[in-house]
Image 1 (cartoon, rainbow, N blue to C red):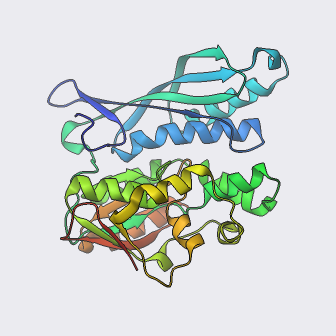
Image 2 (image 1 turned 30 degrees about the vertical axis):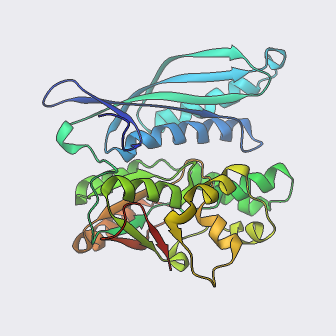
Length: 306
């Protein structure tokens, strides 16, 4: 597979029965707790493999850390958090690379495996498919508010709980039901990733803003303007691809573009399979189970927000 559809991970076919799936992701801390940061970064890296319908096999740590801080236990906690998340995923961490960096960074390169005929792409959705989201959004505004000491502890706890939930259960559910396409919701925000999926699939999308689940406290913090720069870039980048209702306030528009970390899966599937998927997602305990819209024949990549 090439990069023409901006899919979540690279796929290298080994044979008619086997293909490798590879991804890499790392970033600076978005929470204060080092252990939680490690867990979030690892879950985020693993998510791309799950979005492709693959099973992660092993991972390599990627670390940037100030040499002067070594010996204080912070790096050990970050790596311990990442290792714990990998253990929960059944993944071996078999090495990695580190460098002296004034600003801490952590993430993973993850290698997975999938049968070529079982790959879930972002380019195979069809008109008439429904859209299902498996995690609430709002991690961008909450993490930004946290940096400014404005986020309530309950909002931070809810965001951390969501970001440290593996997308494994959601991936297993979509594979069991059979879906048309999927992607995970990360830095480009909900509408940014939906735009990529719809454009690659040559369909348009409709999203019902009222049905999109939000993390506790996210709406209040959005109204106070705690948006990361990436969220506003996401909103601007959509440009004419998004059609907004006049009554939808700017904070609500920006939330739909909020840059996410370790977000959920956005799944497109035939309407007649939605109930089966919803049932399996609930059994898997995914942070959200929300039918948020549908795809239809229209300009490729256009999104109508209702």
